Image 1 (cartoon, rainbow, N blue to C red):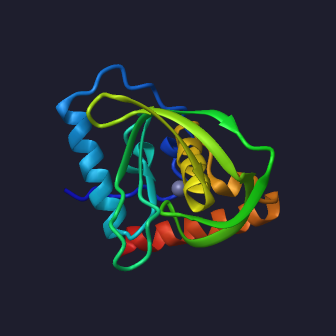
Image 2: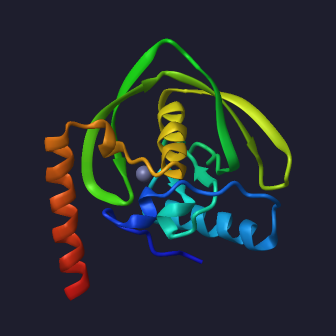
Image 3: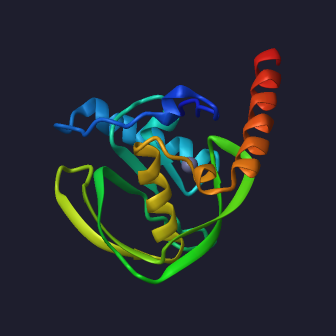
Length: 172
Ligand SMILES: [Zn+2]
């Protein structure tokens, strides 16, 4: 089941999310709904606070090429355990900030530890778009958006555009 995505500015997008103590059916359903919502948007990552749930859960799939097998990835309590010195810059966007983009510089490679949807502990290294995406999604769990990396001027312009969009959506 698809869930509505919160649009910035929203106080729930600024909160520190709580760790998931135990995997429940409800949380597995949420993860499945989040993947469906993400693919439908379409996007390459989604964090639980973006659908109004303040728990440490993200989903991602950065396989974008046609004909390549999708790699739906569910991460409960994801944690970055190591980052590379090398940095990389990507033009980022966000499903909670539609059609707005900005360049963000982050570590080019990260090691991430998480709990998968079966409750197993996983650890893996990510680079390229996956590295950017997983860092962007984990930021969401700490109330941080990609626009927080931009200049105050650029952030304000984007926030005003989103306030206008939300007013229009409320009227529609
Ligand atoms: Zn985002």
